[in-house]
Image (tube, rainbow, N blue to C red; front, side, top):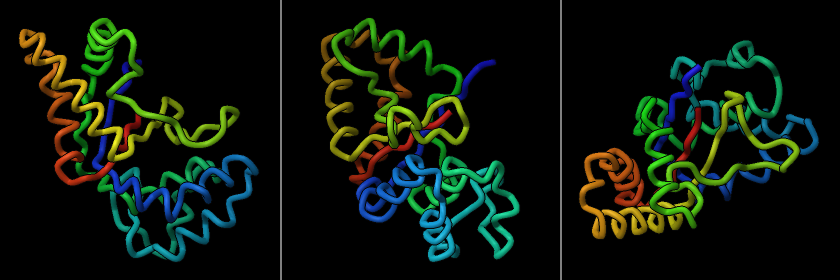
Length: 179
């Protein structure tokens, strides 16, 4: 099965202020009451992450399984637009391999860091979910620009990465990556 790299401009600072502690606690304890409360308080701002339709009062019927990953998936839509995917789609593995070869000393600039504990990272699709702060986006964009400056022949292969990082950088936002 091929994994599709999806990435979204993400209101990372707002996420860390409003939701990250609630999400991490739910992932640690498997108690989703506070996560459900967050969704109920913000229902008019959220969408169903599967079909991108705004939530209705019957939203919980579409959450399956009813765990911190799926509730978190709904809550997270407050901080990004699920209709505005700027990810690398199927080319991500080739791009990541190229970047790892060129930047062997760095962590992947097309992913980010997970949220949760090492025993239970947030992963609603069970294929990986990662976050980049606005600072990390800028750092990764600078690393990419430096690489392209020294090796301009890589520009065609890495153009999509540059575009992906430029949009959140321009907006001073983070990046949410999921598969």
